[in-house]
Length: 578
Ligand SMILES: [Zn+2]
Image (cartoon, helix red, strand yellow):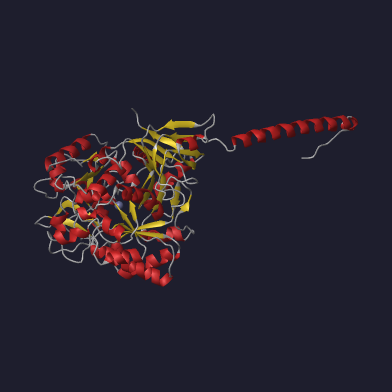
């Protein structure tokens, strides 16, 4: 900006200049003294200090400490309480952890975040211990459901009932005469529709089974209401989508739930694009209090590729660039794909997903996704399903050469013993969910026999072969609580209480190994090991304080440990009410 002086002002120019010089000198002196003061303090003050903690850093350079200082969204100091107190200034919030355990925030490597948020709202059939209770809960919910809305969710488990028979639409039709119902089994691989829902979806005796799916039928060939895997699509197509407003509500519920459990990052498997839009809007407003890595469905690989999105693209709060694919179904639905038949269903070896048929099409898409720099995370549960994905990964790596691409197999539940080595050699990450082991462990042997269970949820064998583990829950399929996951990996004590010493105990791992898989392991699985996963100066300040020391207590007690405090990017997002 120029300064224009009128004739009258020119005359007093000399005096003004002298005055300016005096002001400049004064400013100079003030600046010098401020700099001296800053130099005496030697560093800016921390925004947050947590002292008197048992810090377990998951950083091999400094495995334990007493205190952590945070400036802005990052960790600036880790050390003794005295060392870290040097970062304290008048504006610093100091939290005395009272000797409690402080860990890096948990990073759940496999969730279905919006389904989880919806589960917090939907009809709850998880605890329904009989067909009668199942029908009663659905009837009650239908009565409270506004006209035109559906009864959804549920997460029922017929393995809890005796006899363990699948439910039918007849069981619930009388209590839901005008309300469409579509309630899923807890593993998400089958669901029960009532007659209203089947009518809306136009599923009749004449409807064929789609590839990769089954319409369960009675002796006359009529649908019983249970639809497996791809057949669920018939009904899903006619369920009205969530409104933006409701979706935002659901995400906010999920975020609050994650914060209360010490989960500071999640890797969201097959989100809808509308979910990502909500995450993005919340991130913009500073309301995304859980960091999210989103992995949309693999067949849509080109949506990301065509606009140049590569793995781990985005901000510290929201990233994309991964793809989630499916090789097969689940053990619970007898659709996981095995080399040998099921022991309790000898006519079946399971089902390959529709994505895998024909196989060259799957290979072609994986090649293109890899070429575009996208990360591949493929669900594979049965031993042959896993083996086929390893083959495909090998094809991709051979065609495009060695590169740090971090292929992932999601679940990796039932390993062919010969495949551990291949898994390690291809640097494939095993993205596993320990809670499933104590859940499926109740009945897995009946389904696959005594031999195959030895390499089932094989945490120990994976680590012994040098395979990297990334832990998570598969929420909403299992509870989001990391404490339950740690308890499961360490005890392998099945939920029915029948294996107190551990189901296939050789596959147990230690608390330290489990915590690492749940923090650094999952950070590595999303290319973020330099940003988070350990309590290290320079990394994002994602921290959690626990009510008890899980390294010292009896392993059975780990499941009762509570989260006292959750910090994401230096911000306290949860504090337990006393
Ligand atoms: Zn899943």
